[in-house]
Every structure is written in structure tokens, then in C-alpha cells.
Image (cartoon, rainbow, N blue to C red):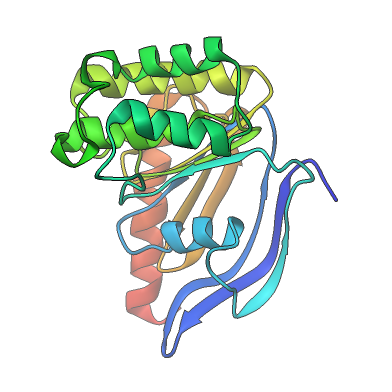
Length: 234
């Protein structure tokens, strides 16, 4: 067992379509790790493999010893017929009854107090996303994996989430965000992994990529270079 996720030579194909192709990666505590790339680049499939939801075709996945892992995917996962409060109560029980103070903090971070008595099916897209993110955090995960966490959020909610994730990682938790919105996470990320067409085309720590503007530029250049290589057959 280990204190991180380790992936070696990971490949996942769906017949003739290769979603992830020969990926090596580690996910470490205390880091905001941005898994970036355009839609269809393999990010979501890779997260699914890490969480054991997708079976790899080839390669090795070593998961951390801690079972405190939280995840949120693009499609929210909660009980539509229950209220927001009831969903929180159910997931709190599943999470081993975490401290009341932590639950209240999560409710505050995602601004859920005004909709606690509303049925989840009646929530807007933004509140649905915030409820799903809150549920992923109820067990105070050591590893938090989020797939496109900014989707459907307004600007204020996005800024609040990014600030929270920076604080959360600083408490020695691993935060993995899969996103094509590199601009939002560039100021806080500690490590950037760029995927395109199932492959990792860039992987580096912040100190290796100087500054948020440089991170944005390097991301764009990595995607463009890989696209040129694909077109030339290289």
C-alpha cells in the first residue's frame, strides 16, 4: 500500500478507440493537481480508472492505503426525490458520521443553507453541482478527485470553490481537478498534467513552469504541438 495513486503504462481502449494510451502518473498528498486537456482527451476515463470505476485494458494502478476518497463527476450523483438536507444526512451516514462542524462548513462553502429544504430534483444546474461537490467532501477525503468541477457554476461560486480547494490541499490533502478551464486553476495548481488524444503531452510542477500566464501558454502550446504531430503522422 502507498500514500498516493500510482499509474504505470495505463491503457484503456473501447474497441478501436483508445481513450487512454500508455499513461504514467502519480497523485500525491498536499498538491492541487490539474489534469487538463480538451474535451475527449481521456481525462474522465483516467479518473474513472483511478477510482476503480473503469477497468483498464493494460497497465498497473496502485491505490492509496487511505479509503477516504471523494469524487464528483460531470453528472451529479444524489437522490432526486430527497431534499438537500436529506441527501446530506444520507451521505453523512455513509461517510461514517463526520463531525457536525465539518458538515456545516461544507454547507457554507457551497452556499446550500438557502436550499436545504428543496427537493434535489428541483435544483438549478448550479446548485445541483454544488450539492454534488458538497457530498464528495463529507468524508473529509484525503484524496479529492473532481471532474469538471466548475461546470454550471457562476463566477462567484467558481472563485469560492477555487479558493477552498487551495486551502484544502494546504492541509495535506490531494486535490485533483480534471478541467479544460486551465485559466481558473492556473493560479493555485502545484502540478499540471496535460492530456490530448489519450496521451500525456506535458507533466510538470509549478516550479518547473514559471507563473500562471506561462502555465496557460505552455498548455496551449502542448495541445497545439501534439495536434501537429498527429497530423504529420509523428
